[in-house]
Image (cartoon, rainbow, N blue to C red):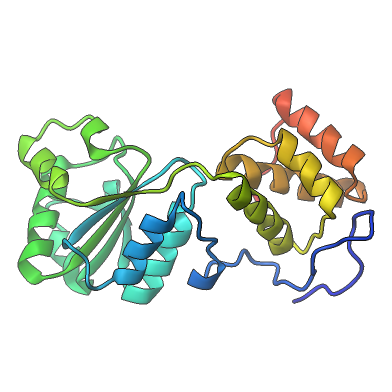
Length: 239
């Protein structure tokens, strides 16, 4: 479903408003910048990776899920979390030969199971992508063999966005929700928004939710009120 009606923003300059309601998650939708180009290059290089195991590290909202989804679709990988890996199901999990292990580590991580999964990936010539917020050296691991295996894997990092990337992300996030903003409003948001992908995502979600709830136009005054309430700790639904 597309919305080609008038934008809910004042001013003469407006961005195009012709987007699906769902967030765009294709490779072409990922905005490439110096802060993430190494990670994008690694995804694009598959299956010619320098190692069967690759670790993608970045803060919340940095694009790990987006790039993970791109690789998941491209490779046919099975998506799992740490808690789903047990000694009993390792052989079944690697049946796809490509595994996307997300949100690692968590409290349910079975270190020995992960160690054997990595070994099996090497044995069968498969591929394993691990996504995490921190470098493996900072994980609270107790199994030296696992730490050694992870240390040998190449790590690609999604760094905090620069101004141009953050600007482009904001436009994309508003567009994903069929909302358009004008240039003065975008500059106002850029001056005040949290300098992270996650901060941009939470702001756009909050603006969208409040605009729908109050039937309000998305003006500078409206967005300013939403940002003030967020700064005061007001929570918005995760949708």
